[in-house]
Image (cartoon, rainbow, N blue to C red; front, side):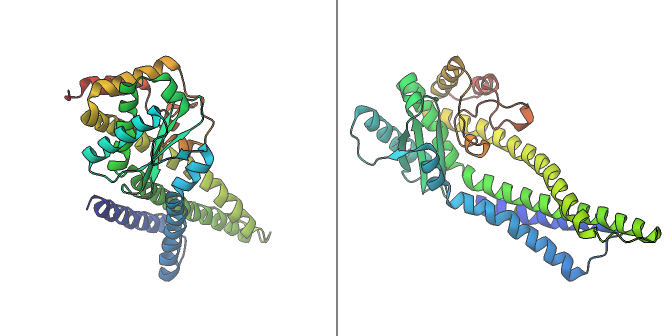
Length: 299
């Protein structure tokens, strides 16, 4: 039901895109037939969502390859037994199916959850995290990742990415059409025809896609930070907030993440590292997360 409501909300946003786009075309006197206009909106939505959902359904495979994750279903060490038992217990509490469990070799203390659905997910933990955290701290981290799965964050992020992509493609096309139409009229008034209308449209469309893409990334990262607070809260409710607070304080003592993975993968992790601007951070600062947990009315 939650996913269905979210999809309906996205469809509502697409209707708003269509209305705003229609207004902008009237303002700039851009003439597109109703059939072409509808086709444009549909094509932008298709382009916007297809790539996003392909990434979602390939996310486990891509992350396994990118991180070199070794998954296991039976324990060959006390470490693996602890991970399997803890994740099984947390999954049962959260009401989700047991995810795949894996370890990847990295000194970077981190963990991530991914997958196309809450009952077909993957939780992977770095060797650096296991070597540098106590079991209580690791439990806090695992509760955070299980909460991401239970909240359906992977699907929600993909839906949001699809809607933002649609915005980018649609409004870039409208803006580029406005610019190329204006320049064509200027050429006509001067009695010259450069024949460069298509080139102007192509260049301006690409530039607007970059500009609107940056704005879309700001929105996406804002939502990513919001869901990190919710996952912290979920961990606090599953394992007690002290475990999560201890985990975040341990991450703070170890310093910023040195992960070289792409930002799209950093958004899946417990610790997103640092960026040049707070607007593009996939994770809130650790101090803010710790303070939010301390204010939480959970034991």
